[in-house]
Amino acid sequence: MAETTPAPLERAQAEVADLLSELIRIDTTNTGDTTTSKGERQAAEWVAAKLDDVGIDSVIHESEKGRASLVARIPGQDRERPGLLVHGHLDVVPADASEWSVDPFAGEQRDGYVWGRGAVDMKDMDCMTLALVRDWARTGVTPPRDIVLAFVADEEAGGKYGAHHMVDHHADLFENVSEAISEVGGFSLTVRDDLRLYLVQTAEKGLAWMRLTAAGRPGHGSFVHDDNAVTRLSAAVARIGSTRLPTVLTPPMKQFIEEVSDAYGIEIDPDEPEEALSRLGSISRMIGAALRNTVNPTMVDAGYKANVIPGTASATIDGRFLYGQEEAFEAQIDELLGEGVTRDYIHHDQAVETTFDGPLVEQMVAALKAEDAGARPVPFTMSGGTDAKSFETLGMRCFGFSPLRLPADLDFASLFHGIDERVPVESLQFGIRVLDRFLRAS
Ligand SMILES: [Zn+2]
Image 1 (tube, rainbow, N blue to C red):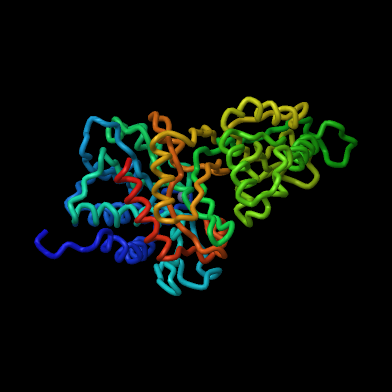
Image 2: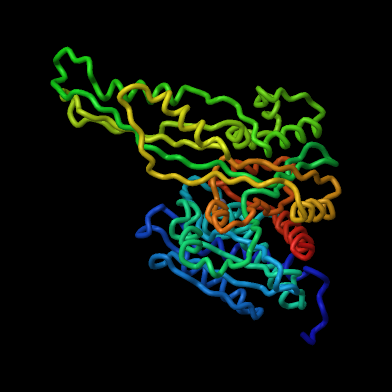
């Protein structure tokens, strides 16, 4: 371009908040049902136009009408080297405007924040990525290896119409890609003024949603009856809901606890780490769930009339297992079920885990430290799931790395799917600078 060259990343840092506002204004609410979900096609086309602006081609594929995902490949200097995937989802969970202090789909900018549904999950990373690659294209930056961008549908309902679909039907777009970054990780937790932990996600728990079914002898509600399906099911549900499964320290969480212990100068009992971890604030609820398999009853269904004992009763439980713990988890559940109660999976997805080492991790650490001298990156396990579960099946090492330096007093964990979801503009700008260093070095 003939015009005067702007300072590095000046444009990216200047436009990221406006990009995010624009993308938030495209309501991409995912209800879990295609007929009532919306906006993903429009959002994908919006991304395509932003990439097209700077000469980056992309393709959009739909799994079902409107369930659109976009992929683009930025050629690197060495096209032989395996590429790196930067993926983000375009959909968001619903927001009830009556609970918010702003319109959740207005993309308002106020008090140094961008407000709205998706501001942290995860239109922030979508727009940091977009702003960065637009800046690169305008200033002639070529990354060392291919970078594949994926902006996908349906993450918030398990990815069937987004990442899973792309992996199953368009795997060629991800050919020769060995590593991936996305949500949830790379954000800071302030220990003190000169020390911040940056939690990089290296593992995700697996997902095991099950239906429990108890059988019994149907009969009249007025009789003496000792084989009641509702009673049997209730006992199993009560056992499951009131049991805390044992602490298991997987490698990322062992390392996480050591780092926290060192950062705060406290002893943490590896068998009972939770009390010590409570000082991390609300994030400790997510962390606590990564220390064990968990299971919670969520739905029950039985009977149809007050004086009729039904022949069966069923309940739904939400189980989450750690990497390498699936068999142990199933055995734990079976023991709690007891006689006469069976289980079936209604939704199942794998746990994933990689190690916090190697050149890519070193580049993450270096990029964070270059932008924040008080940064101490640490691995952790996410209690929920992301599209990493899909992309991992193509053989990629997957990391949650959406870098944000956050204000010490911001309750970040509560903003995910929360009311008044918002992100500081300065954090977005920080993220762009870190991503720039990281992707240019990787
Ligand atoms: Zn998300």
